[in-house]
Length: 283
Ligand code: ZN
Ligand code: MN
Ligand code: MN
Image (cartoon, rainbow, N blue to C red; front, side, top):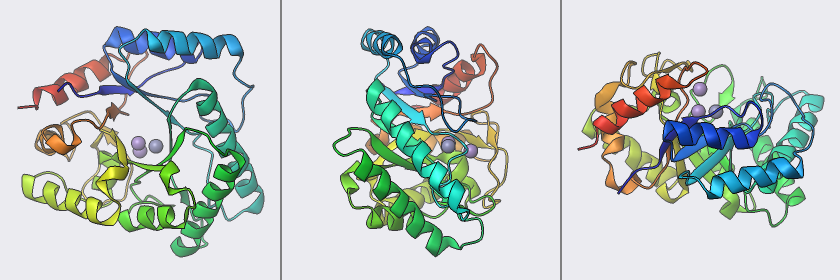
């Protein structure tokens, strides 16, 4: 079967423009921001833009779209004002996805900024429950991304993610994204068939493979267990081609979309090159 592959794609000029760009680049899966990712809020999406997004999407070869939320959002901020703002902005992100018909909102769990991991995990789940209660019946899934564990980031252990989902009331609205650069930096090795198998078995045991809906297929500029989040082009970092070959040839994960978040210029030609590397690994 043909795997769904693509990259984070610019929405400059409007969300529908991302579809055009992705089509030209030959992507079948993409990630976008539905608003400026460095801003808290944006003006609502207008109806024409929503329609042209949906029309272009239906006409395209793109079979999977995920939205990444704003980098400012921290669902377990210890500052009450920041927490409040984050919760509002997260609900807004869910609403934008729902309007566009995007089925996954990817987000980093949060950084506890001093309150500790256990408390942070509880506050994240509470934030998600609040958001879900305010968006009853929405189709969009809240997709937790595994992190590198930089600073006080939560989500660098499979157990963190499992615990959050356990505390969320509407579990069917939860899904998970593995960022390969993040889990590698967090200490989960995938470079040989043996360690890859162990890592995925652990994921399945602790979180459940049924929850896995997306890969951020990034190589890592930093070493195993470094807890530093730096993405590198496919095969050129510490994970290397062998590591990606394990994922690309894992039959169980063939249907999971794989999306690049690696450095690129405006034309995104680096994405094409990286996807060629990944495809070449499929035996
Ligand atoms: Zn992310
Ligand atoms: Mn990522
Ligand atoms: Mn990252």
